[in-house]
Length: 592
Image 1 (tube, helix red, strand yellow):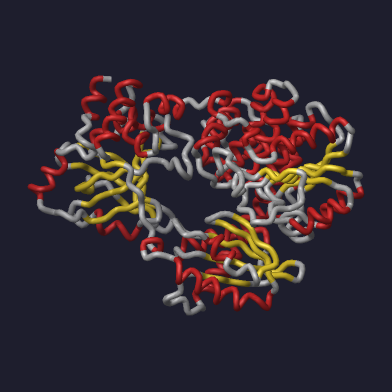
Image 2 (cartoon, rainbow, N blue to C red):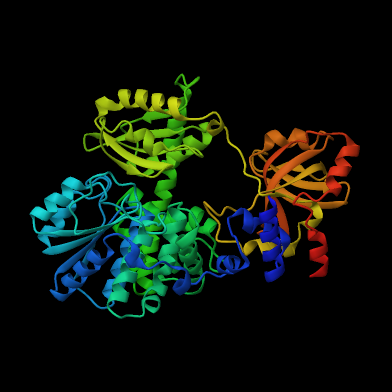
């Protein structure tokens, strides 16, 4: 931290009277003044959201929507089958349903339609007399399908957030903050976020109280932002922060039913709960059968209907878990039988794998082998796949380099989908490996932790934990702070736990202060010898609340290694120094 950053840190700490560690973390996250820190802690919809009409084509989209309602045309809300797509469809559908009833919605089937805008979907619209389709989380590359719809007299408004090609579809309006010709101030919205901006613009244009209308729908934004792993910065932070408040206080009947199934009724729901519990359940419908059930859940008006939808989706989720485990095991065995020595990417294929779980399997292989992965299966005579990447490496560009081999593709930096002819798989495998080999750096091939700040044990208190919670919601761009403490020892009670003794229950002491803390190191059995070696070790960790002992904190270990300097004199000297620019946080804790 340079001198200017120290001055900002001190201004924030003194003006807002906050914990100095939290002030340090704010500066590291790009907050440059006490005023901006206040907005960070308490974002406001009216003050902190951008004008929706700054987005390219927004005026055209609102004009066409107004025209459709004025002419009483039938409108079809069309979306992808994942959480972002189904929540976006639910948001737009529920919003419009307040004052217009000639509406329908459509979610493509993974097998019968494939990803994105399909002829089957357009034909459905044609048979129903639809004149306008609002496409959410898809459509940015659907040049042929949008042209086909236009020939049939059907207009499109596209609300997408995937990377577009230079040529855009012939839609009335293409809303995508990633358009190269779009100067919208925030490019990282989820698809549900883009749908929210369309409804915000529509409400404003028609003289409505936009935030009174849209606040009850923000729980859907929170679900989409967390599930689609978009950055929790800028507008996403505003929508996520407010959406989580809505989700905790007044969730829609569908989300209330899912919250109950997840056992979260009496807890404060966080982004982590969405990512690991709520989101996968909603996603299960689109993975196993059709995402329409997820939309049925999210637009349900009464609790009984919502509970029945949630029950069906819970059954899908159990089937999804079984398939996920089976396909993951088969994929791992396939890789084990391959010669991957020296390979910097992996492409695996089995035509029998269920299309609904290959994205999850790709993520698991990426985690296991820590390299970009493409997992392929077969559907409708084509190979269909999902790609996942590692920190800092753009897998979308790798697939883009093979666009002559694929029928269709789209996605983001770290996740993409593609379809291709099965006979092109060997050449795709070769070309992906060559591209990754040419472009990946040595640093990108190794996992590393970004440490936020080094702290002594006496600063780790319940008060600090409560102060850290004010930085939430956490996610990409605003990760949960990772701390490091050095020259620690086993306090005598550390032990292996778990069914296969794969975890470590920690009891750790900092000798110079005598402070000790408990913690957990999941799947770190290989670190147990370090802890029991009698030598000092360093530990990187997050600070969590013990779920079984409320108001008790514990350390969630992220890595453990032998301290580089074992000289006790130097160790004591280092521990006595403050590791975050001589901030006397202990004095702060005592004074406040």
